Image 1: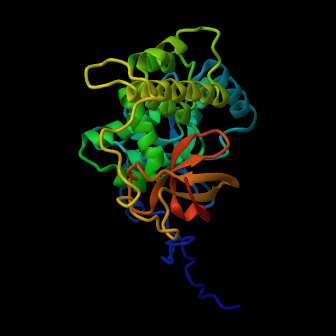
Image 2: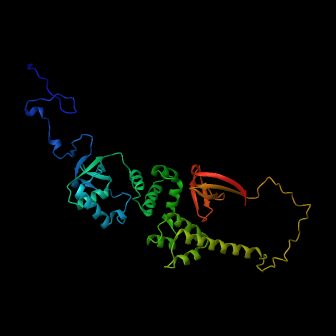
Image 3: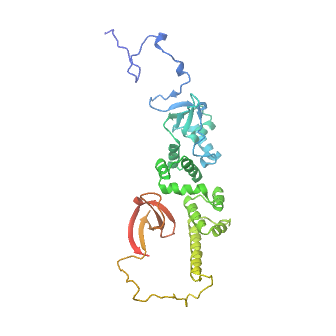
Length: 341
């Protein structure tokens, strides 16, 4: 039997293990007293003491977010009591308080664990984390309300960040950003209904804002009816009503003379009617007004050519079935035809 046995190594380190018990081989252990406990599998999450963790005061979700409701947290707390926290939260080191951590993502799991009486929670430390990352993660899980998204965008705009750059940071289209920017400065009647939670669909809010610019009194009166449902269909009816009113107004103006007196349209003729010889021949190959037809999300639409797109590669579209106007990425659009309007 060979009596010369090699010293075993410390698992995973490659360093020789000293089998002796001399205190000089132990090094300084004081730094380990308050250190988070690592998981047994090496590369896993830390087990952090709950009392070392603080919530981020600037996190995107606000206290009235549905995910923070009593009922929602109670359900999650019951799950945590039964099965524990299966998905670790993400934290970063608190630079203003040595040894403490700020939550990047996982505030609901943290709150539910508190309710469940847990003293520790699994966590990954990620110091390369910012507000945009928080927004993206919550957006991907549909955890943010329209108001919270708008407020996040508003903070970025206040920093001087351009909408196109915010769109890239949030992994959203410029159209998505523009629609939510509208929520930051709503007309009072629409803001009132939005804050009450009566209107939640951002697309419908943008539609109402556009209609309010054209006929503010009629939109205000329409919204003031408490029994008025606000749906895609009813907003379409409102838009058709506004367009009908505008059409009649335009017709009335067209029969007014410069002094404001009504003129008989049938008997009115231009003072100098152009002769047939003055008329230019019509070119059959030219369109007087082009209509560009497209397909978007399997729905027929047309390009809105008189509205400025938010960025290169985007355009305003109008659905043929309900008349809704919106911004879209042209990569998502298929050209189907060009006709005369």
